[in-house]
Each structure stands twice: as C-alpha cells, then as structure tokens.
Image (tube, rainbow, N blue to C red):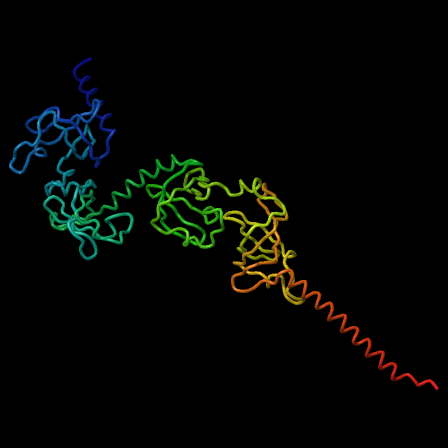
Length: 399
C-alpha cells in the first residue's frame, strides 16, 4: 500500500469513528499526546479526537492536564475527525466560543444564579444571560426558586451586543433529547408491558399518562378500577406517579391504551367459587336504569336487580320510587353467569337501610295490600246492603 493510500485509510477510519458521536455531545476520553497547538484524546476503540491546547490551560496559562489524564469535553465538530471543546462543557468558554456556539447551535453550560421577574439570571462563562421562565424546563414548575444554584446545559437563542445580551433556553435541548428518546421508547412499548408513568392531565373520560420522553398513553376511566369510577379526578391527579399496563398499541405506536385495574386480581375470578344461588349478600345500589338497579356486591362485582323484584309503592308510582342510588341492604342471588359476568339479584325487603329515606319492606307492602283488599270488600259489601235497603223500601207493601 502506498503512503497516499495509508493517509486515505487513516482519514476514512477517523471519519467512521467520528460518526459515532454527535455535535454537542459531552464525552469522556484519555489524553494520549500533547503537542504545541493541540492534544490528542483517545475516546474509545480506535477513535481519537483533538482539542486545542488553550482549552487545557488555567487562567495563568499553565497546563492543567498531562498524558494519561481523563477529561470531559464537548464535541464541536465531526468533520474530518472529532474536535473537542473542554471550556464549553465546563462553562468557561470565551466570548468568541460563545458566539460560535450560538451560530452552530451548540449547547453551553451555565449556572442558574437567581430567579428574576419573568425568568432566571444565568451565568455562562464570564457573561450573564437570561432564561425565560417558560424555557427553563419542559414541565412548568410551581416553585421557581428550585432551579437556583443548578448547573444546566443551555442553547443560546439570542446573541446581541457582542455577547453582553444573551438569551438562553434549556427547554429547547430537553425537547430535542425527548424527541430522540421518544422514538426508542415507542419502539420498545409492547402489549402487556408494565410501565411507570406520570399523570399529565385528568379528563372526564380518563387520564393521560407520560410513560417517558413525552410519550403519552390514555388510561380510560373504565380501565382505572374494577369498581365503577364516576369521577376520574377523585381517583387521580396531575403529577401523580402510577404504574400501568399496556393494553393496546396501534401500528405506528402513536396511540397507546393503558390499564390500571389489570395490575390487581379480577374480583370476578372468585365469583364462581364463592357465590351461589340463594345466597344473601349485602349490596349497594350504584345506578338505576329503566329495567332495574345495578347493585355492587363487592368492589368490581355488580349484580342486576330487575324492576320486577322490587315491591310496588302504589298504583300510580314507578318501582324506582322505592329505591335510589346509595340504597344498601340484603340482596339474594337469583342467577350467576360468570362467563358473561352477570348476576341476577333481588332485594330482601326486611331490614333494609337506605340513604335518604326508608324503603317499603315486604311485610309492610303485604299489609297494605291486605288492608286495601279488605277495604274494597267492605266497601262493596256496604254499598250492596244499602242498595238492598233502598230496593226494599221502594217495593210496594204486601196487603
């Protein structure tokens, strides 16, 4: 192989190694050689990067490192090999480097010194910058002072007056990282996976849960608990961390359905073993329908008490007048269908307690019917006797 071929091979290998890294990425390496203008840094494998000597000197111009030392630096270029900057990574960049970072879109390190009106004052190298409140994080923080004293990586979004007027954003970098991570997370999510997430919002139909890198799934109200959940906001709140199970994922991973109740045993799994026809259990009416009342026998197990099983309240009143949501009492099991998850029940009228009023029990209903029957007979008999007397009075007397 000729010398030009060797130079080409070396450059080609350097180019391949450089592709492993991205501009703005902070990496760690070992100094393998120090020259008059640049130092060479081994970044793993056959990869080698260069860094200017000025980046390795202190304020007095003395070298801070030696061959064999490990350093952290930021990738500022991948063209023709890797070029590193230690000052950008350590927040010690010069004004010119800050301008270069602004024009190239490279991240810089800065320290949040204090919260001010509308944002934060950030120290970047020898300059002070301003980070608007909305640009400090992806999630809005209700305690702005919590960022004070923290060292973050920022992107310079405005560079004016030679660097005297800097506006920076941390959120822009976080969103980029989030988008990159989101692709991997969507690929990794499969049906049946159990994930830890954070509730981002609660609606009347359910809650949206962030399972990482901004990837959100929907936890429908019907999947929150085995018992009926009427108000999700009473069950979950924004910011709450929960563990969920992936129920469905569409082809491109954009829509993810989550479940919470699936992480606990289905109460219907024990119905067939513990419930039997004729058994009397305490239940609570959870909702009313035209055809009857739904009764919760235990969390997650509901039975249906048909309208015909309730005692009548009068000739002109509907059965539902005798029962309301919240009614508690003894219910007898009439039928069980575990496969369809259906149980038929009937209210055992004696000893019923109800929220907001009394329910007419069977004995009272029977007494009312008996009294009505007696009153009707007595009334009919009374009218009959009177009619006979009138007819008798009107008959001509026998001579």
